[in-house]
Length: 195
Image 1: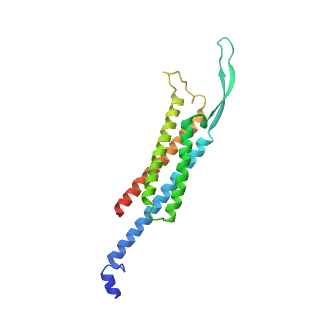
Image 2 (image 1 turned 120 degrees about the vertical axis):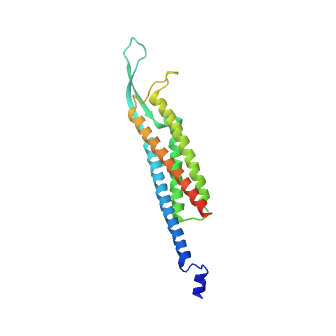
Image 3 (image 1 turned 30 degrees about the horizontal axis):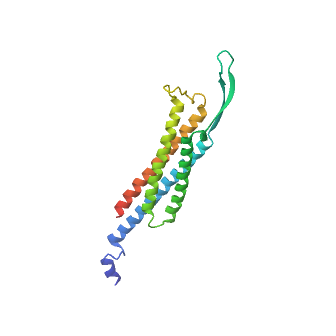
């Protein structure tokens, strides 16, 4: 009876059994890449959040009230929460970091039926991180270059450490967003092959 079951594709060996082993190996390999990419996205968004969240620099800036009087030295502080684009950036990265941790736990638990939901939320994280990165980058560029048309001066000449730390945080966040996008592509291809 076992021989008949094996001959009819019952999965007791032969080509059918090897085919199933390959599928299991591909699932494990996909889970491995999924785990690595999600962990890297978690780490990058966490580092970007912390890096920008602690970004602060104080400088003594000479301020001239009247040209005939000597300049007055005024302590000026640059903080991330002074600009709404940077606040949006930190909150978006914190959300993406929390989502990466939750999705990492869900994928490790191997919950069935959540694949499409996770793909959709990965795509939402891509949009959220790219939009917050773009907003922070636009404001950062104004700080770096200034705007001569409206007489906005360059700020990064004075607050160099602040601007450099912000630029690194934006770069890490955009790299994390790219990892989420890669997760979307890989999961979509895997889901398409499966169906």
